[in-house]
Image (tube, rainbow, N blue to C red; front, side, top):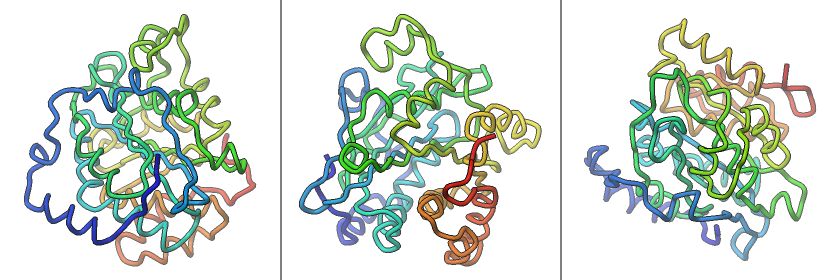
Length: 302
């Protein structure tokens, strides 16, 4: 998929239709839509085409438990437009094709993972709006962010890597610790197929990292991590896995700019210059997120 092209007029019409609507009105789904159930959809593809001859696959995987539905809403309101428009204008990578994922808790949610198609036009926003914001989660002090890694590793096929050896980009976004792994039963329930044994988060990250550059945006001023002690708890689970690719975000409204900026820095841009290019409060949020991100070619893990 991903054969269209982002168009500002399409976005303006889409945004106008949703102006003034509540989150419940924007996200009307009250159950998992089979179109986004990873156990039913099989492989998602990011392919080159006439409008996107050098496609770059990007996954934005957001926690939608508890209060984190606000992040998906932010993407609907402005974040998708910022992400697509700024990548197209700044050109850190060519021809972005984006998949959205909704992440929950494999141990207690009915829909712990939902996946859209890879899209390059307004169809991405329309699919994001059709996801079920379950708002669940549990009392196990963590969420199943690693499901995004498992799906990306086992259920995606992307031309940027298969034709050109260029990894895609995968960003998880949320406020909680990452759970240590997932059982074979839950892997089968979420992804379909047979998984006689479970996988650890480290194993799923290793699988995904073969074809994806993986980052996590940790929201530090909302939800679980707004409490400094709990933020440290979250970091103790994330840092051993992703090291400097854990990007702290002090303003959820800046998630899209952090995504664009992290891609630019990973592609060789100077982090300070990238942060300064946004200006104002957004520039400060981006600078805080990028401050530990190493230059390309340097070790990013611990």
